[in-house]
Length: 89
Image (cartoon, rainbow, N blue to C red):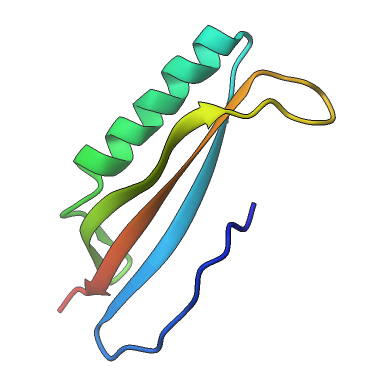
């Protein structure tokens, strides 16, 4: 899902928006999984090196919210973060 935003060319720093959808067998399971994903992104991803890029910071744009699949009606939550990256020299 694209939520908008923009891209600016920078020499060393970039920011990307990541929208995540988490499904479960019940609303409670989907919610618990979504908050597990949120916790990982906000607390574990910063400081990691990924294929030549260093994750400087991750900031929450939208906390996980109830967003069931419109076609299947499966329980789902959606959240969004900004990921700040630099080249890992």
